[in-house]
View 1: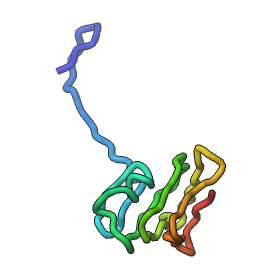
View 2: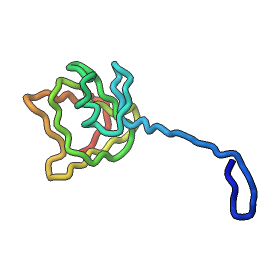
View 3: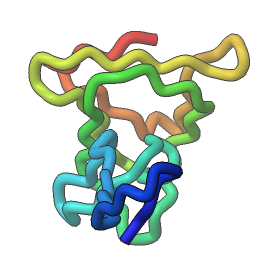
View 4: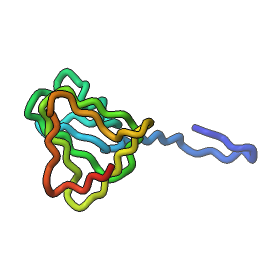
Length: 103
């Protein structure tokens, strides 16, 4: 029980929120950044990383053969800490054609 300065009491409630920003479709794992989804050891070549609406300020290094796509109808903005917005090594990027990913 919690008590305020006037002596009123009320039960303490705890709520947990999970921001579903980035998801590996195959594994169902949820991430708060695109890079953490890419780097996860359970993310394999051929996986699809789905990104919910928002602005992601991160430098992305894609080192696996992945599909990076926005959730249908949602806008995703990728901003880099530097001038380049995303990095792909050895042509390992595949952008889903109907995605609204801006950089």
